[in-house]
Image (cartoon, rainbow, N blue to C red; front, side, top):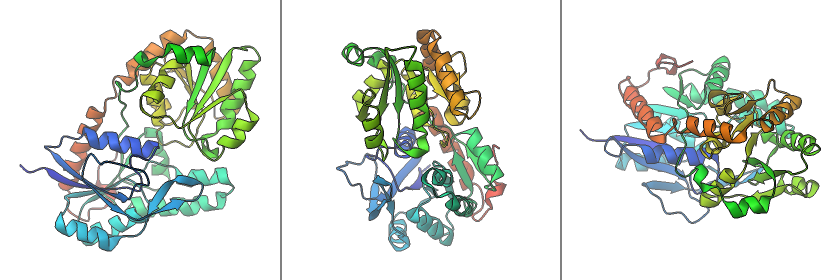
Length: 382
């Protein structure tokens, strides 16, 4: 039996530094190459990059307010030429940009089954940039896009319920996994701990408005009054970094960290704090747990699914800043070592191999449906 041919279309992939690029790479790397043959279609990387699977590149354009990311341009003709030489069995569209829409239109024209992924709450991001009027327009676009596919993969149950209420059909929950070797308590570094000098709260992610970072900073300041040795470390970059760094000279802003260095920072902290309320998943939550860190977060996305208050972390009692601050205080008053062990135990159950097997099963299910089957006819997990 020949391998299933999977065309993956995305605006972002490694070496881009973001959750979508990283999780997509992990998923594709974990697929059984005897069962699934993958080819990737994406904008040309702006950094040096040696692909680990066949990639086809097109021109990209930078995204305002996200200069480290780019969109693909509409490329129906280019994709058609590619797919005439290598006709896929299934098209998987990982992002909803112009390149993804070109793939959707062409796949329908060629009667190819299409599934999509919903990774980013773009419609909610607009509220953080004074563009709330765009919110309903963006949601309308996302609904129109995803309802033309046989299934839309989402990484968490609360995202699935939210999108179901917004009128998006064919939702399938496929959580992200985590590399428990790359992120491991054994990466704890004595010299880094000495450098940080104190009890360490860690944030990893984009330094941007939609991540709700002032909530974590305010919680840190309130706790610092009673715990003068408390430190806050912010790993990542983004439009708010320069301003926040100037206003908070005692907070360590490391910039973007990768590989072993990132793993050391995770494992060398005491508590992971993640105040974002716009995540579809929040992969950094699992990376922190795999590193042996208890997590403080709001009850949404990955935290809602995998963090148990009082055991492996603390969830805010409500959506307020005060609720998040209270959760931070409850966490720091617990046995952090014991909570970190519980967090690690949970992460060990979430391997990428297991996630990839679920994805392979879905691909086979999609192929069995006649071309043109409406999305709502695919089994929904909502």
